[in-house]
Length: 146
Image 1 (cartoon, rainbow, N blue to C red):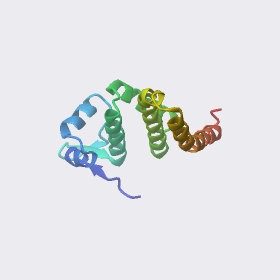
Image 2: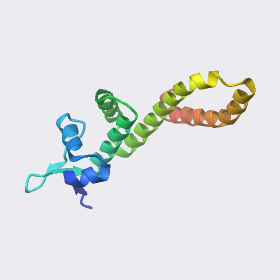
Image 3: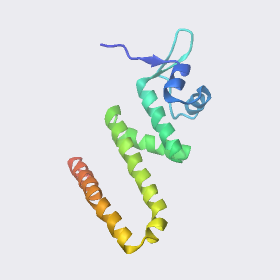
Image 4: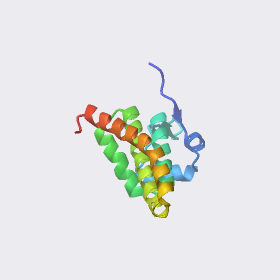
């Protein structure tokens, strides 16, 4: 069995592109947790923690509050203990929510378009949108969610 790579706080900080203080803070509020401690009592973090930290950072960039982040992470942990599946589903959820926010930001602009401009834009978007909706429906059906 291969030994799991563990990172001290400074290494994790560089990989996730956040400050060690941010990692300390997220650890203190329970968003992330060290996997173990070294012989010299350094906190050691795993690749799974790095992925979780990267998701937290992305959610912060997308303007989620720490409580929203905590809730989202807890929900995904309930759904699946499989980290890879959880990571992919969380990424999909974040992407969909980001798209929703962008669409809401575009609504005022879209209402200002001339009919010909709107028709051209919708003509370009409809096939991609339909393909995305179809893929989501297939995913939901396979998961027995519908």
